[in-house]
Length: 412
Image 1 (cartoon, rainbow, N blue to C red):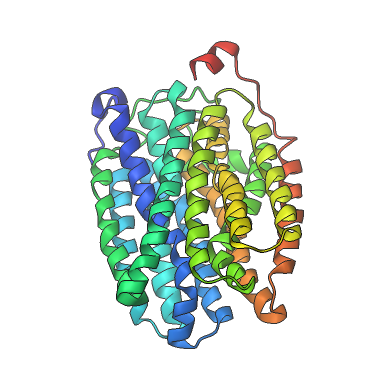
Image 2 (cartoon, rainbow, N blue to C red):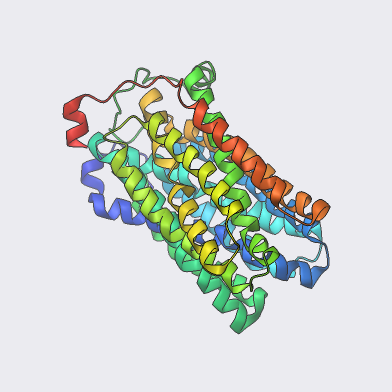
């Protein structure tokens, strides 16, 4: 975790950098995105009610976002390895003690502060900024897609594993096994060590030698950055609602709980497809146009789901559709941040965009529980999803993004 000058090309081969970042994201995201499976068992064990437990999950969405700008600034200054190490240990602690929490405040501490804060420190803003610095510009688009796909692959593996462990060990034992499993992410802290000053990488950005406060002021005065953040707010609303309440949606449709685990698994599987495809596409088309397409496809998918009969097959098809767009917004969003401002403060600036994402996630997780408690249905959440998706598709159109030169597009 040294901060002496380093040449990125001589630290580790590209495949090892991608394996470390994608593997760490797979474990942290897989555990985090599978927590929705435990909402009902926690409710049964504690009797707190879905609304109160949703508050803990919603706070976790918010805290995950709040930690990322600070985690990004820390990674820029003291090194990615130290931040990832701390994040992994916090996830392990929070997940392991969750079964012992019997009050709303206890769940907020375990799920919302420790686990979510750790996942934010070992999350996409830190991991993607690290790979962006360590790899040459022509590989960055695909690299962010690979890292993002790692998170999806983790969800695909961990969700059914969590379901199987719950059957065999009970929900408390399952959570504690997942906590121990997260320790496998620790080697990534060594591979991704180094900070922004010690890595000789540049994105050819208009501003290079800025302080952190100057970079923040520049970003907040940039309309395209604000519009990008607004779109990512909507993404967070969608993602958190699905991750937290999709199993409940499926149960409300009269299907057995096992469909919830399979739906989350399919969501993660097809997000791998979406993430890798998007990583390939960002080097060939305008990233703002790709984001518009993603949000428009979400609106269409939700409309079709509401109109279709609610069978197990339909649920899995819907999960696959939404999975393709689930986190495929991350590579072009990260790419636009790097394109606008370079890599010097990317972890912090992308962390701020992730904060907007998680403000939306807080509302998506919280309102999902509140709406269901008030109406006995999730329909109004789906209506909100549709309106927000259309708005997000439109807000990306005015973003200023220069077309890629033909030679750069071909190289990418």
